[in-house]
Length: 483
Image 1 (tube, rainbow, N blue to C red):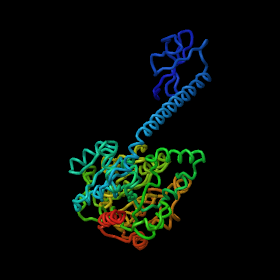
Image 2 (spheres, one colour):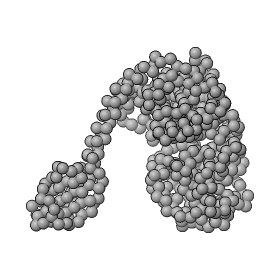
Image 3 (cartoon, rainbow, N blue to C red):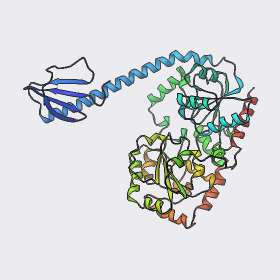
């Protein structure tokens, strides 16, 4: 494949060569009078009867870009064809999983498409290891590093792609996940109980309610192809592959009924296992909190945890505008630290331009699971992230920064109601506005305390640390009743 550093050499006459690289053109000495050097994929040569003018050079710049795009498209199509053929080859393994006997005491777990060890499925997984010796809990992942780390900690873990991962999914009675069945091994998940924990209380519309990203907005031809694929290759159909969903309250259950297209009898108000981590008083302070700030005194910790969006560049601009605000001065005066944790979808696209030791950008390697960080945060700043619903459990102040609300609602996601009515905190569109609200909180002027208290009652039927226990008991009951 021709990469972005490819040279397109325009060979002229009279000992001249024009070399195009990344859109730039420079004149060099004549090197090789040939139309095309077929011995390398890194050079494309064009020859002319006379030296090309600037317009001709620009034309060939665009030809270069088009050629590169076509090569990339061809290779992408080839890769998809190879994957398609591979999935047909694997299809018998899916049908085999229908006849393999299931063991009610084998439970498989996964999270975030098999790429992370985090969230509610992790907490239930660890709860079982601590309290349920009769259940064989198995973590499946696509990352070898996670497998190795879990095995070092005494847990049973396998690669999703491994023979063992497939076979144990065939034998399992239940799969517990936080996104969809792709969190575990889809080939072996034909007839087990698919238990959806989801990843938070949604502010943004999700799954079937999400008009921007659902299949409703696809063409009829695309929809037809999707249906054909789901029939011919059912193990690739991960959408709608859940039997039951957990919820935190009747209000959230109503949202999930619509989003997951499930009857109310399939939604269980067990509470969220996230609360078991957020509310526990035994949570050890994450090492990153001391490691990143070991040379400064800290009295208060503030967290800025925005959601992901399509316009990641605009988010970076907003974050870096801290340099032109009074926030750093406030943090120094109050001996506070601002921890910034971006959604991992946007993290790699962010260009961080803030150098203050009191503003810490947390990477995925620093702390992948934000719920272990929340108990140590005194004030939360966010925008459209559902993290504030989790933070409600602590009933601490929240500041909202909807600097791009109109754009977000028009191209990213719709919300389950009016933004101002769903967000229990002041709305700030600049960092100086945030500073003003921080000063108000310093004066103990928490104007939204009652709003947060009422929201917590509305969205949480259980405010305790028994959520994983209720999830496990619900699964036991469902397995027992299905026999």
